[in-house]
Length: 150
Image (cartoon, rainbow, N blue to C red; front, top):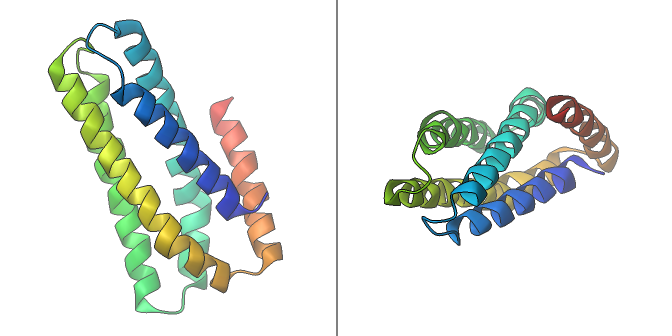
């Protein structure tokens, strides 16, 4: 699987989990805990493979200042979601309205980030990398993701 397909599949899976989380009520404590833990695990693996493998390759292949801008913006979006909002959500009582608000903010951040990557960074990556290079990156991403999730 090429790198972009793998990353897009991750986006779709996390979007689905976030939609499931958003649809829960304050009474669905166990479901909320389970779903948010799965989201945290998926996001950690996804951001790690992007930051360790995909983004550095993208930055190295980039030819324009816009490529650098995309790279640094993506890193900051990871930081906002993964270091600020997600830890707050994990530490919030799943039976509270505060949990619902934080879940919504996380969903908005992740969807914005994924949409931006899919509309800007991924099409640019398709121009910067050959099919063979994307396939090789995909293998690296897949292997590292499996390692992180085991």
